[in-house]
Length: 602
Image 1 (cartoon, rainbow, N blue to C red):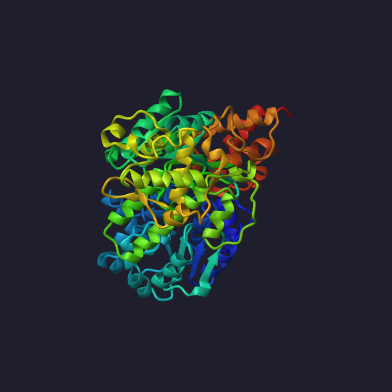
Image 2 (cartoon, rainbow, N blue to C red; image 1 turned 90 degrees about the vertical axis):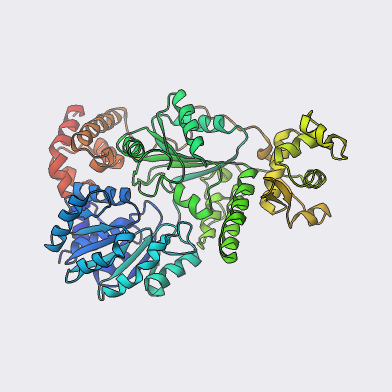
C-alpha cells in the first residue's frame, strides 16, 4: 500500500501535510473513524482523498450538491485520479460510473445523500470493497446546524451496514452543540474529533453601517475591479439591481438566484468559475458547491442568517491562502426582520430560541468595537487573543460615545407613536421633519416631536441599531415596525447605559485605490518576475480554455507566482515547486517552461 505522504507528493506535488491534516489522514489510513472540523481553505478534501487513493478499494463520498461533486471530480481528473459522481442529470454517465465502480476502477465515487440512502444504491454496494466513507459538509446532519438537511439524518443505517469501513465527517462550520450532534448522528466516538480551529488569518473582516446602500457597495467593489468576488444580497430582485449597478461602473457582474432558469444559473456559474475578475451577485442559493480558490472578497448587503452562515459564506474568500476581505453592510432593520421571520416560522420553541440566539450573536458581532476575529473564534469555542491586528476594529480602533439620553428619547418616541413604525419614521419624528403621515396621525403634536432635531438622522439610525442589538427594540410582525423589547425598561428607568461606536454616526468613507490586502500578495516580485507571472497567467487562461476547465484547475496563482520567482529551467526543477504533481508535470510542464524561457532575462 502506497504511503499517504507518497500519494500527497505524487498526486498534488505537496511535500508535507498542513496543520492537522496529517492527524486526520493517519486515522483513516489505520481504518479508524474521524470527525474533522477545519476552516475553509485548510484542505479538508485532501484528508479523505489521500487515504481513498492509498487504501484498497473505492472511497465513497457523500456530498450535498451536484456542483460541488463535479468540481471535486474535475480537479481529481486533472491530477490523474480516477473519480466519478452520480447525479440526477446524466443517466448514461451514472451507468458508466457504476460499471467502473463494480470493476474496482474508481478511487473515489461521489453521491448525494438522497441517493446514498436508497435501497437500490445500498444493494449496489454489496460485495464491493470500500476504502472509506466520507460525509462532506457534515454540519448538514445536525438539526442545530445552520444548514440542516433531513436526508443527511438518514445516513446512519448505511454507515452501520458498512462494518469495518472507516467513516469521516468533515465540516468547516460547527459550534459545540452541532459537533456533538454530528458525532451522535453518524456514530463517531467523541475521542475521534479533530478540531483544527476556525481561524482564517488571511481574511480581513470589515463591518459598516449601511447608510448609503448600493453606492456603499459600489465604493467597496470599484477599487477591486479585476478581482473575483461574491456579493450576497437578501432578495432575488436585489441581486438583479446590484449586478446591473456594478456593470454600469465597468465591473463584470452576474446575478444568481433561484428565480433564474437552470440554464441561466449554469451559464453564470460557469462564467464565474472559469473566468477571472467576475463578481457574482447572489442570494444564499449560491456558494456551497463552489471551490474557486481565488475569490478575493465576499461582501454582504445585509445581515446573513447566523454567525455560522456568515462564517461559511465569508470563508469562500481566499481559499488559496492569499489575502481576502469580508465586508458586511448592515442596518437595524435587518435584525428586526430576521427576528420577525423566526417568530413566524413553524418550528419547535427550542429551535426558535436557538435561532434567536444566533441572530443576537450576529448583531453583537456587527456592533462590536473589539476584535472581530476574536469574537468569531470565541463563538465557536476557540481561545483567541484580544487583538488580531488585521480586522477593521484592530486596524482602526473605534471610540465609544454615550447615547443613553438619546436612547431614552428614541424608546419614548417608539412608545408614544404606538409601537408600529420603523426606525426611519421615528427618527423623522424626533427631528421634527415635515411629514404628511405624521400630521395625519397627530404625531406632530406629541411631546417627543422635534426633541432630537439637534442630532443628525445617521445618529438616530445608529441608536436604533444599538437598541436592537441590546434587545430593547424588536420587530412587530403585524405592522413590520418596532416595538419595545425586554431591555427597554431598564434603559428608560436610567438603570442601563447605552453607548455606540463614534464612527457609526458618520457617513461612510469612500475608498480610493486598492485597499490594504485587496490585491493578493505573496513573495515579492520584481518587475521582470511580475511580467513572467502575467505571461504565465495568460498561458494558463489558454490552457484552461483548451481543456474546458477553470484556470485554477490548471494551477493556482501561488504556483505560478513561485514559478515566476524561481524561474525553473528543467522538469525536475519545476517538480520541486509545491502544487506541481506528476500528472500536471506531464501535461503542462514543457509548455510552462517554454513560457518561463521566453520571459527570462538569463
